[in-house]
Image (tube, rainbow, N blue to C red):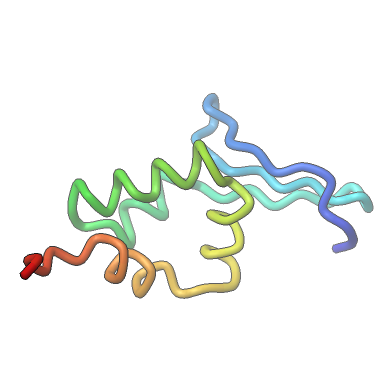
Amino acid sequence: MEKLISCEFNIDTACVELRFIDGSMISIDCTAVEDEIAHTIRQRSELDWLVYNDPVGYANMILNGDPAEYLKNVTDNSPLD
């Protein structure tokens, strides 16, 4: 895979699609990701926000990061003192 030329959410397939200059493509099934790692509505909402507002960040997190740790950190229900 070479240089990334586009990354967008395809609402028809519910996938984030990454296209590269060499013609290759990666398609991330967002429904499968949510079913696997998002266990609460807050976690699903966070993933949905990323898909629509930062698909590159979403793809990077899924392919290179730790999505379960990310969701734990951003949806923590600890009370404010």
